[in-house]
Amino acid sequence: MDKLIIRGGNRLSGTIPISGAKNAALTLIPCALLTEEPMTLRNLPRLADIDGFQHLMTQFGVSTAIKGTRPEDFGRIVTFEASRLTSTVAPYDLVRKMRASILVLGPMLARAGEATVSMPGGCAIGNRPIDLHLKALEAFGAEIELTQGYVKAMAPDGGLPGGDFDFPVVSVGATENALMATVLANGTSRLTGAAREPEIVDLCNLLTAMGAEIEGIGSSDLTIHGVKRLNGATYKVMPDRIEAGSYACAAAITGGEVRLEGANAADMVSTLAALRNIGIQVEEDAKGVNIASDGTLKPVDLTTAPFPGLATDMQAQLMSLLSKAEGTSVLKETIFENRFMHVPELARMGADIATEGRTAIVKGPSLLTGAEVMATDLRASMSLIIAALAAEGETTVRRIYHLDRGYERLEEKLQLVGADIERVDD
Ligand code: EPZ
Image (cartoon, rainbow, N blue to C red):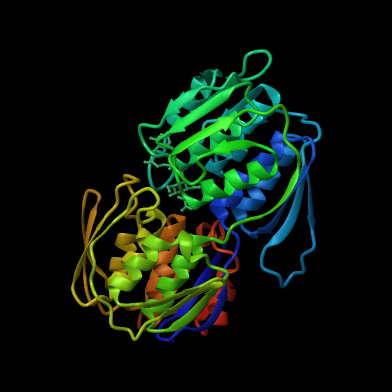
């Protein structure tokens, strides 16, 4: 198992290329199930979760062809072809490793009239139920049976009629499953209270390119007019707004000046607003975002919320940054019940953070010192890297497989801007 060794204190300076978005790619890939024609995705990030999803797709008889990339390239081009399916079952041993596998449920049901997917179970940040996914599919006419840890979904003969569903809670994954389930339905479906994250817009853009008819894209009220069939398409995955926000925090905490090449500022409004309030200079242009800090950081109060609010996936990274702010910041996590796993590890590096339920009180500026720390979940791991870049001395981060799920060639990208970081075999 690899570990990362970081020696803090270097001001980051230069350009970081931003990869394709993991959380877009994970919902774009299963769209290949919706057509018998080839579907090609460009700018697909090289990540463990993406490899895992590609492997899952081959379980159904989907062929995947990686093309057009050199080893030094970031991202890759992959063509998926589901001309005929040999299975409609997503097995436990694959789903348990990657909960996003639940996103095959909607498209598989739409394509094959049935789908059997292992229930994903919880993860470090919460129990993460899938009740909204299932209620939505039932609203579209599916029959759902839970048996032996599996979800078995069946469409009536002739396919899903479609229907209306109002989301009581904003759910990114359930909105994605609902969209992929209804684009081939026999009628019109209306989603209200749907998620509006940029990754949902990316999904709607791909589905539209394949021939789907969707109204209200980008809003929380979506109308999907079912069509008889969908074509293949070639589509470029959107840039990763959370990766970009993470590296913005890394640049800021070191008092550095970094360009996030390829980042789309329009996807990052709440994060960039938070950084500006903290005293970071943020300049946006059509091809990226420039981040500069003189190292003086102001405390701010932040509350996570569904898009366009502050992304929960940015909470841990901003908390690290705020541990260096001159004063007290209050962070409220409203999306997941256990998303402060980074706090004890940051405390071991000298951060002064108290948590009460879903609220964290961050006192700064703390003198951060290097330590041996353990990654727990993807974004918590990144918050430890960010702290280590500003800590005095050496930090060792273990269990970095959590990082490899969501950050493409992390140490290479940080080395590009002068970080003293290396990956070693543990
Ligand atoms: C997606 O997870 C992202 N993952 C998460 O990113 C992200 O944190 C989350 O959306 C919120 O933005 C992917 O896109 C692969 P939700 P998802 O359904 O879809 C509750 C990362 O770090 N809920 O929007 O699973 C749920 O418990 C990951 O990249 C139900 O109650 O999130 C949570 O409290 C972590 N019932 C809230 O809704 C359901 O059926 C939001 O969850 C579904 C969700």
